Length: 107
Length: 152
Image (cartoon, rainbow over the protein chains, first blue to last red):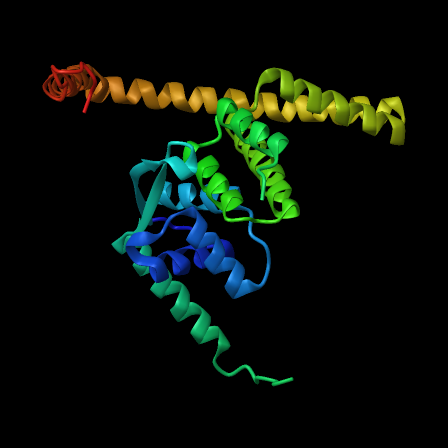
């Protein structure tokens, strides 16, 4: 497990990955982040983040079948590992602890 | 919607430069779904930008040339701010301090090496290393698939 804590975008990517389960590849992950944040997402940065997470052992990937719609290129499916789930839970705990006690101003 | 030709050519060129095929495939899929042109161009610029950053991260290493260039630039910058004497003094101080630290580090590593040789730790190492490498070679031979000759 990595000693570094998760970055904001890394956490978003991991959460999108959990939401999509077995069908998680670049496009749905980027769309989920776009919908949740309301900001456009660069697909290349999603892939960079996923590769970094894979190097840390938080994510694993496998290739699917190539399709003609993608010019014969295969999809790369990603899945979160148990170490990744542990990191997400740790991040949630830290955020919840920090949020507790902060007054919320509804606008 | 017709596919923008220049964008497609740049995607293919990106793949030729080392951009992953799955990323190019994802972008093609999204273009087919009718994403607007500004989105496509933003993605292509992002793809080249991320690729460039990755290459720079991989290749950026401290080399003697780079260190000399950085030191030279610093000296020039200092020379433009202070007198030549002050710059020379600063340079000589840096030179003596780094030289002394380097000398002490070399002496310490030599002393530790001599102590290890006396205690016999280093003499035992080559045999262990040889055994471990021999083991790895055996594993490597066993993991080669005879059908295609590739390591599995």
